[in-house]
Length: 107
Image (cartoon, rainbow, N blue to C red):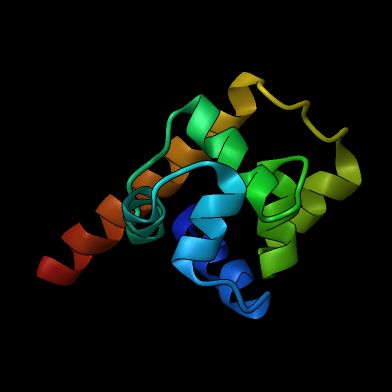
């Protein structure tokens, strides 16, 4: 599961619109829509987005959305602190996955 898919899954499960999430996170609706399409947010925007959904870390978000790999990481490691580089790396990883999926579907 990509980070973008996890954000959308959790947002819809919590019955939030993009506008409502944007307001809670201190972002614009347009930014939320872009992140759900796969654009990787910067560290501050990522922190706001994940916090707006009620999580302390990106791993918690992915685990709640059903990503088995994230669940295992949460079980085996300490949850990363807010503002750490891990936030950026998780978003970047999701962006790379989406790009690979697009390339594979074009072939």
